[in-house]
Image 1 (spheres, rainbow, N blue to C red):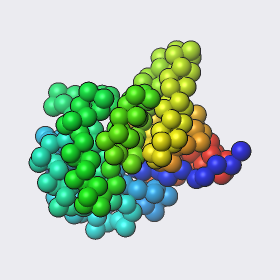
Image 2 (cartoon, helix red, strand yellow):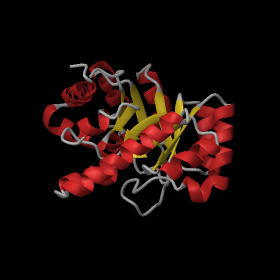
Image 3 (cartoon, helix red, strand yellow):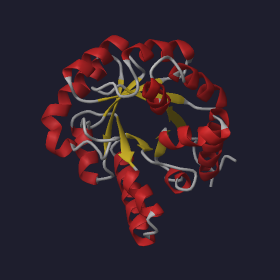
Length: 250
C-alpha cells in the first residue's frame, strides 16, 4: 500500500559534538545541513541545549544561511530558550525534557504532569507563528494532554522500541511498536500531526515509518555515525530510501 510520503528531518547536532571535542570550526554543522539538504532531507533539526554541548548560538544563523529547509529547534522549557526561539523564529520548535547529566534526551516530556509549565510555552510560540511540537512517550494520556494545551504536533519517542529490538526482545519490541501505533492513531483522530524520533536506524526505521499517521521522522545520531564510514550524503540517501520503501514509494 502506498501512503503519503513522510518527511525526513536530519538532526545535525553531533557534527557539532565532534567539532567541540577539539574546538575550532571543523567539522561545520552548517555544511552538514547543506549536504543533508542536497541528499534529500526535508528539514534540519538542531538542539540548542542549556549547556551548549553541541550546537552553539552562532550555529543558528550559520545553519539558516546554509539551507532553505525548514529548521526544527529542539529546546527546553526555559525562559532563556523561549527568548532565543522568539528571536530566531524557526519554522518549528520541539519542546523536550533536558537534564544536564544525561548524554542525550532520555525520554519524553511528561506533559500530563507538567502541563501547567508547558502550556504557556506552547501558547507563546504558537502566537509567534512557530509550529510547536511536544516530544512525548507513545501514550494516549500524553497525547490527550498535548491536545488539551494546544500543541498541533507531537513527536513520539521511539527510543524504547529501538532498545528492545537490539536487545532481541521480540515480544517487547512488538508491544512497544503497538504503543506507537495506538498513540499515533489517537493523536491523528484528535487532529494532531504525528512525528517520531530517537535512536532510529536502518534496521528499525521501516516498521515505524510504515505507521500510516506518521508524517515526519527526525533522525540524527545514527545518520552521523554512518556518515563516518560512507559519507553524509550516502547516509542520508539510504535513510531516505528506507523510509520511502516503508511508505510504498520505492
